[in-house]
Image (cartoon, rainbow, N blue to C red):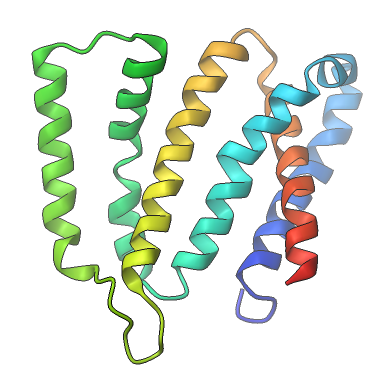
Amino acid sequence: MPEFGPSPTAVVRVCVGALFLLPVVWWRGLMPALKRHWGRTFLVGILNSAVPFSCFAFALQSIPTGLSAILNATVPMFGALVAWLWLRDGANASRLLVLALGFTGIALLAWDKASFRPDASGSAPGWAVTACLVVCIFYAIAASYTKRYLMGFPSLVTAAGSLVGASLAMALPTALL
């Protein structure tokens, strides 16, 4: 990453994955399924890779990876909330208590590490923390979207399509940077 920068590194990651998986999809005879469901799988790529990788690329320029890992621990909690609100997955008292305890624990771990005042380098770690939390919300939305619209699809088709979608979504903005 230091040689290329965060965004180009993220684009290379998804492009290499797509270039590896597409021949496997073709070889297994799954190209018709990918063509039929390209829109849904590409959207998953934007939700689950393009936006998160871009946000992490921004965030990791000003916060340590340890803090981003702590914040990333909110994914299951956001996932439960999104599933509860969107998919109407049950939320009972014990689940809500566990969610509240989880959020409280993560907030306690990260509380003193975020500030919206610029530091000496001019960056604002608070915005980086916000970017990491946006990533977690996008992961949660992607998981519920996949459950709702891609259940029963071959996972190889979903993975390849999402990597192609992420590659396309990230290529132009990265080239313009």
